[in-house]
Image (cartoon, rainbow over all chains, first blue to last red; front, top):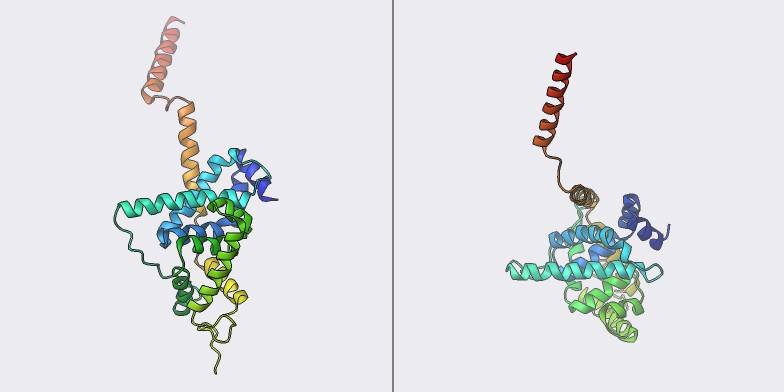
Length: 183
Length: 68
């Protein structure tokens, strides 16, 4: 079932459709939330709240108008709300939480990429996440961020290049801290 | 680091990091739906009202039985 159809079914009160939608989009929604709030617990709350909001507002979605972008827009708004609340409560420490998978237990190297991601500006980070994880087109991201698609494309390429440098290797892949190559 | 590898790793990181919160979502939705339904019913039926109705029916039945 297409995302459009899932949203329509959710608007009619179908929880199973919402669950399918959740399975399809939970990773990009979490990624966008995390890119904005920079904290696992807060991003988790945003993830949860986003799908509750989708269920409530699915009726207002216009079919054929970029469902992923619509969902991302909801997640962004909620993430900024959460960020404001955290800042108001003076608990925001601007520290990127450690991300590790307890099952695979490979935290040391995994952290580097997240740290590198947070060296980018807020907007650059969102562009990378929305394009790479969310699969949004530059044009769709441009609409969400209020900037031309060309600017999004340029920022995306620049951000990837920066990330590559932050990861401790040259852009051409000659060296990588994750896949070390002897010289 | 090659961009393709970087993109692959980013995806991998976020897939591993994303928690599963479907159960709390479903719980929250169930709570909201229940609250909305109660609002539509204009509040819970009063237990006192039900008790009074039962007492009234009981008394009515007794009167009818005595009269029979």
